Length: 327
Length: 263
Image (cartoon, rainbow over all chains, first blue to last red; front, side, top):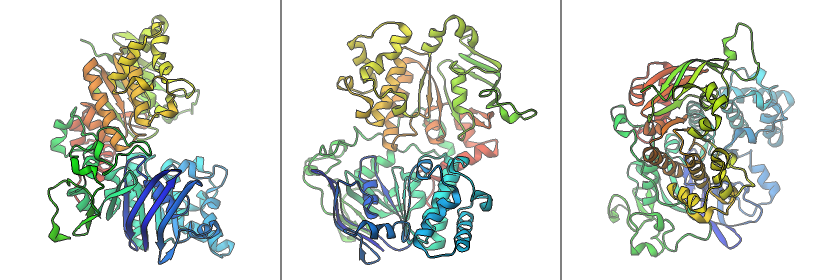
């Protein structure tokens, strides 16, 4: 459904994102994972034409066979909120504080669909029920500040799915929320995607969260795709050293019988931090933070190696040599 | 030895908000709690459960309407009236948002020296400032920078360096890593473990992330609606939650844990 080819996003002299190939089949949930500054949000935003004004985007992004890049702002506005829905990180900032919930959710419907006032209200009520908000009738007249963070995020999900999008882009939708609230929102996203056959591009720095939601994971570092594959395969048998380190740095919660031995035990960390734009090393962009870097890594990493639908590019992959026959 | 912090029958509410006959008006209700010297305590619960309020009351920043807080054997009201600077020096806090807890117009040099200037009434030397930065893994080059020029992880390190510059007894960390990336979280959590053991600090950490608490804290209290609903050794509370609420927190944490089985 969504095909990204040779996507390049640059600001000034710096190429922030370069993704040679990434696909999102209809109805699939794909996670885009990386640290701050990895270019994951920039990638997601360029799909819907919301990259910064001074960014130069080249390559190709096709959605259901037609090209999205190079479309006018008017044409992109029809896509956003129509065929492609969008949810952002901070629900409190994404909602207009002066606008009642009813108006907020109906905005996309009024822009994209030709419905009578009665039909619009019915649709909004049905959407609020679908995102499992209690008392939709009452809610229509409420203002954002009268809702909790979790309820606000549900309202945003309702607006994002208002026009039955085929693809939903969710950028860190639960980062600002409590764990229990987060769980509810993640379950809701999975359920809506299953029921509606809606594809989801889920952007997050937290592999634990992505693993729960997505069937496929794409890991980015320094604006480059380093590993893509089915979730279980990427998490259980990660091949790129960056993915491996990201997994190790995630504290998670140990099994009950192991809790005792984890108290006070240091976490595995990734050395240093993501370099500033233009300060990435030549060759493999991760090599100055990688414990396994060798001389080979000074050279640009090999093109994507494919094993049973799990692709990665690394000179010294975790889990041993490449199974060439599996290609 | 008596506990370092003793809390008994503590009630707290903001302002004069009082609804007759409603216990709900209290942000903290009838809390009793001991914190031993050198221990690590996690405070968990959802937004609005009173976690951050509790920390502010224990530090003497907010004053309880009922009940008592004793720090190092003396009532906190006595500390506040007789030796307030000592109380402040010995109880330091690291806040959630490092960007908002540092003054954007103050260079790191000034921000870092602030606690010593305020509490010890002297200007720290450059040698000291550099030593404090080294403790948290930062270099002297950031002294002349301003908060907007540093990353979230670097700012949180500055926050920790500032807090320990006055040699506190208790370090309160209020959601110290929830605004950071997973990879940066790990670095900051390791730093907290290091400074705690190096300076023999008592660590009280507020967090909604049970994974984080299970790594850093030997003891835990679970708060809900201003009450402590469960308390004990972290490993036991998480393995055998006694209340449905704690169980829901553990389940939610396991859902997004990488250690969870595949689904």
